Length: 252
Image (cartoon, rainbow, N blue to C red; front, side):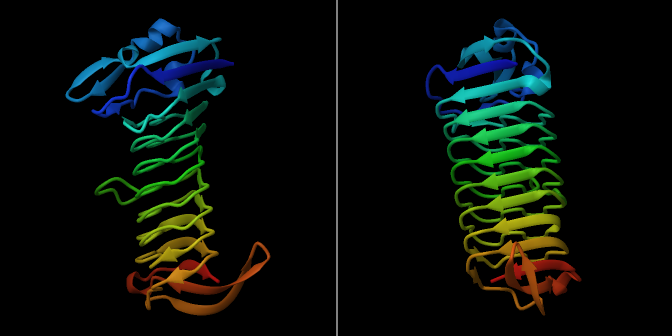
């Protein structure tokens, strides 16, 4: 097992773009090699070691490499971008695009996450033990497909546009969400244990299950009786008929 521990030397006001910080790039590397990895800070590139204290324990494959962030990294973006295996643990808040394009492995965040958590991920697992901001599991601006695979679990609340343009995978929210969850969905499953407002607008396929209260349900969904899920009976709707959608929306 290889464990790489990172902690900021001092709080940064300008965001650090840490798209190279993932187990794929850390596996088998020494402390000095990891410190030499380049990150963007403003308009220039610097070494990771310019900003972080780095401690390496052991040496192993990508699958057996774990990165641990100690403390708040709410101004560090793109942690875990494109990772294929291994694990990242963040003990604090994290900035935008954490897990962007993630293909495999696991990210655990013991804090809150900013926008675009798990954006366009295709595999792996993200567990957020806090609250999420906007566009969880969505596609970036102009993309027709967001999350395609994997699973995101949010043990708090999430803001608007959860799973926007989602094409596959699963999102589970233990709390409530904001406006327009599952907007323009093309596949996958979203389970919301709290409340949701105006869900599944322009959904073409996929499934959305809302266990709390549903506000402002669109009139462009067709009610088709009931369906049981997890031992609970829900009202079943299909749509969004405005776009010829055949998605399934289950609400209490």
